[in-house]
Structure formats: C-alpha cells, structure tokens
Image (tube, rainbow, N blue to C red):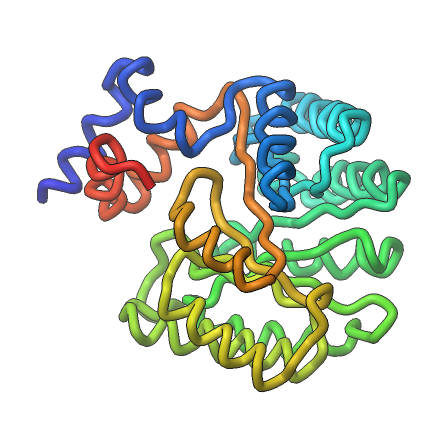
Length: 303
C-alpha cells in the first residue's frame, strides 16, 4: 500500500525534488553530460554503454528525431574517445507503430557504430515486444555479425529456450552477445518467475547455457548471489577475459562493482541520459511500485 501510494504521488512531485535522488543514477540531460560521465568511468577502468532515455513514442516523426540523436551521440562519443558502446530501446524508434520503420532506424544506428568498429545493444522491453526484438536482432546480426547484441530477461519462462534457439546464428567468429538481466517489467505469473531465489536460479542456468555454447554473456546484475554463482561458472568453464563481462547500472552498488573489477573481470556500466529522465523514472516506479522503497533508501543512503 505504501509503495503504491509513493508511486502514484511521484509523477506529481516537483522535478527538482525527484532529481535529488535521480541524479546519482542518470548522467544528465545532454550528450555532453553522457560523454563526460562515460569518460570518468573509463578513467576507473570501466567500459560503458550509453543510452538515450525514452520509449513508447506516439508518432514516426519522433522516431526519426530519436534516430538522429543517436547518430549524434555516436559521433560525439567516438570523437571524445569514449571506451564504450551504445544501447537502445526499439519502441523509441516506433516498434509498436511500424516494425519495419523501427528496424530501418536501428539498422542505420548499428551501421554508424560499425563504421567505427563499435557495437549497439538492442534492449529487451515488455513481453509484447519480445518476438519482434529478437527478430530485429537476427536480421541485423546477419548483416553486421560483430556489431549488434541483444538483452534477454531471465525472469521470463521462455528465455532459456530463446537462448537455445539463437545457437543457429552463433559461431566462433561472431558469437551471440546477450546481456542477461533479471527484468524490470511487471509480467503475469503465467509467463514470468516471481520468486527471488527461483529467478536467480534461472539467471545462473542461462549464464551456464551461454558459456556451454561459447556465446558472449554480459552478466547484468547487482545481486551478490548471482555474482558469486557467476564466479563459480566462470571458474568451471574458464572463458578468456575478453569472452564475457559484468554489467551494472550507473550509480548502483559501486562497492560490489569495484570488487568485481578488483578480481580482474571486465565491467561495463550502463550510462542513461536525456531530457526524458523524469518521465522514465516516474513511469518505472508506476510500473513496479516495489521500487518506491528503493528510491526512498536512495535519498538517504548512497549506493
């Protein structure tokens, strides 16, 4: 009840107040903010993935504008020498309006990144988007085999099979590159695991499957049990350091992040920025009211 109350009130709170707890988790509003944040992380030995905040647009003019902004982001980050790549959400380019238009925009962004020998990650959104986003990934990977990756959500019951299905496009020269995360969208129990321990168990099963198939796992977690379980799997399968990585969100669990770095593992931090930060933050809390208590802790307890 308390979390739901906070999530309902949050969109009506002053932006300046919301920014007080958002600023540690969002790089800023401008491309310059994102580039500066990424460079600071690079100085700490951390790789980055830059993401423009926004999704679920209303018309295709917005999709065109968003594509152009991403092209600017890539140009600016490459010019600044950022050691990192890029992440995007297909609904930001009109996936739910016109899938083919979204595909063409995303393909153009990947082509731009590929011109710098760089990489774009296609984020996974809620379940109505899953099949479409896997399809876009497959299509683009066929043309740019080493310049595109995908996100999968380990709490979805279908995910383990989705990973197996991708073995048909996996090979030593261009391994399937997947960011494994728990998943944030509220999905029905019929298609998603709900129990904390059960989700962690499937997360580790998915990591192991990727290691067995010699795919490239990007292990995106802030959860110590998953990190510890991943260490054991990495010891078991012994991939080279450049054949996997850990990932975390900007500003979250810095002590755990540093401990992973100290053990010699690659770390990449997701760097979100953009003028739509307020809508993004408040919408996320409304979709998942349980996050409200996390936000309150963030106001008083850093990290």
